[in-house]
Image (cartoon, rainbow, N blue to C red; front, side, top):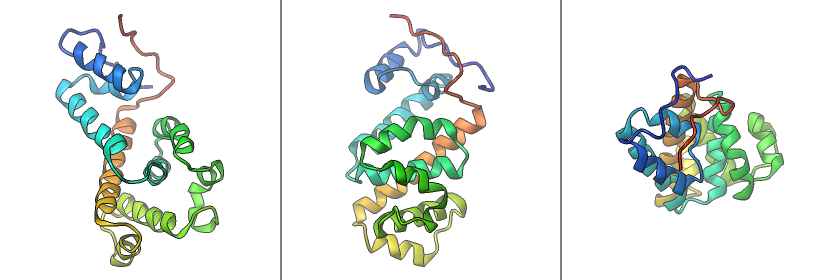
Length: 179
């Protein structure tokens, strides 16, 4: 249960932003209903996460792989629930999703995915990435993909931390968006 009420999506000061969120995301998700308490934060968040998810060259399967791993590491079920269908659509398998908790002991991942997962784990758990972990991922990704991977891991750590601190839950009732 959310720790504070979700924002009123029909408030005049945020109504244009709500319309944009619905246009871009299909509906007003719980995350954005909470972010709407601060129009500037919600606006910046939407722009940044749109860039991460829709404008980067990083393959979607790698993007979703790290998002799902971050959700697991940070205990963020809302993030996992939102992204599991996207991960499957982007090319991850159900076996990979199931193996994420113990990816090191699984043969469901190739060498690139394993390097990416090790990098994700280091960034999420320790912040400081060991040289060997960086070298392994650098060997497999070009500079642009590496920057986008790093930004994605940072962004989704931000998402999960926000969700969990605020208690955002997909089962919470949301205020209706008026037509």
